[in-house]
Image (spheres, rainbow, N blue to C red):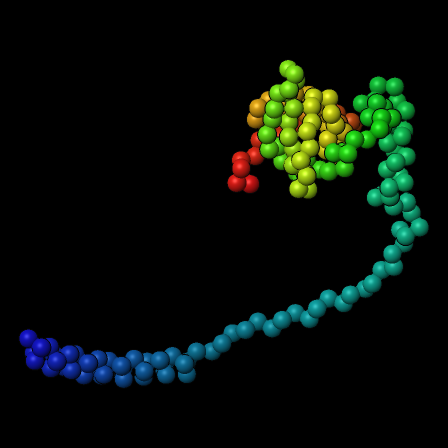
Amino acid sequence: MKRLCIPLAALALAGCGSDMDELRQWMEQQRREAKPSVTPLLPPKKFLPQPYEAGTGVDPFSTQKLSVAIKQEAAQPNSLLTAEINRRKEPLEAYPLDNMNMVGSLTREGRRYALLRVDSLLYQVKAGDYLGQNFGRITKISETEITLREVVQDAAGEWIERTSTLQLQEKGR
């Protein structure tokens, strides 16, 4: 069987040789006839520098301007911020909620507490405590989550309340 396969393979390769010559001739003909058509690039537009003239105006991101706006908002009688601005900040208000992980809960003397991990430290919190950077106050603690009320600005600049939650994190996280 092997003796028969070797001559057949040689015969098949020899037959392909003539096809290869024909293919090479066709490729050469196509190369000679092909005319590349490249559209020339347009010259770049001339850059005309403009002087910055708003440097003397009020910086919209100024912390001074923001603090004045918050004080004005707090001066209004029905503002949600009035009580929030005038109270002393708690330590966990220095951290955003994204940096906090609920790692457990416990009940002691009929009151439920949650355990939060922030920057490798463990904190015990209860309903009424503040956390997060949006004036968040804990309203409810269950075995698997902390519910809190935050005071934030909506798209129109009005201060509104919103509810946020921190979920219990699995051990692997």
